[in-house]
Structure formats: structure tokens, C-alpha cells
Length: 200
Image (cartoon, rainbow, N blue to C red; front, side, top):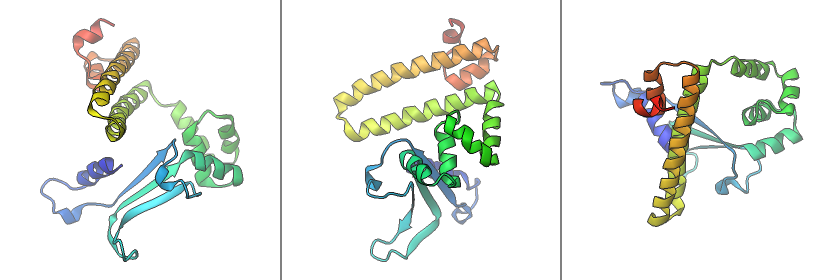
């Protein structure tokens, strides 16, 4: 989360601009697993910033704001209060095709519009999204393994990750070829070589 924040924060400053020109960045992290840090908190959302340890009211900066929303808790919140707009959106994000979301659409027109938008997305947009999520998954997996494995285990896991990554790259490239997409676009999104793509 801090990695993504730092990249976003740095990108708000144009070349040659003073640091003071950096804009506020708000990260909203929606996670589908339980966070040990917040296991005693019942609310689905926690909000984080940088504060002085002893003087809690003293905040170092307002340019970092991190929201963590846990999907399991969001579902529990929705079961308790089906009119909660935030919980409704989390149900949609978790699975836009779920039957429960169809019911939510009847009273929340914004979610209905979002469902329609997803269904109307072009194949190009979907493939670009797949490529982005693939890269993100690789980085996330490496971070998770690095936190809990020794070097030997890490090397073994990395080999497995690379094998899985290559398989996903080939699957995406094959789908793009069936859509008659330009080979240079396929190379750019999948990071495969021209030879690998032509063999598909």
C-alpha cells in the first residue's frame, strides 16, 4: 500500500516543481482477506494517517490518507444494514454478477450504471486491465513471500511464480490474437517476444 502511495504521491509533482506542490493522495485498499492488525475492530473500514505517537491529535501531514476496507466485514455490515450505500458498493466490487447485487441495483441506480458500464467495456480495456492486474499480482505475491519465507523457499516460489506468469502472459496474448489485435500492442501489454506470440 505504501509502495502504491509513494508512486502516486511522486507523480503529483511535475518536473521542476517544488515539493510543496505535491497533492494529497487517498488510497482505498479493498482486501478479500482478514487483516491481523484489525481483527479486533468490527467496522469494515479503518482510516490511517501519520500522527505523533504520544500526542495523537498532532498529525504530521494531511497528504497521506489510507482507507482499508475488508470485504468479509463489509458483507457482515450489509447483512445487518442492507441500506448502507458503502456496504452495497462493496458487494458490487466483490462480485458484480452476484444475485444479491441484482437486488441492490433495484434501489441503487449508481450501482446499476456501474454494472452496465462493465458489460459495455471494450475487449481492449478488459485486456489492459488484465495486464495491469497481472503485474500487480506478481509484485504482491513477491512481497508476501518475502515476508515469511527463507531464501531457499523464496527461490522455489519465485520459480513457480515465473512459470505461472508466463502461462498467464501466453493466455492473454492468445486471446488478443483471436481479436486480431496489432502484434506490437500484444508485445507491449504481455511483454512477450514477437517469436513467442507468432507461435501461438
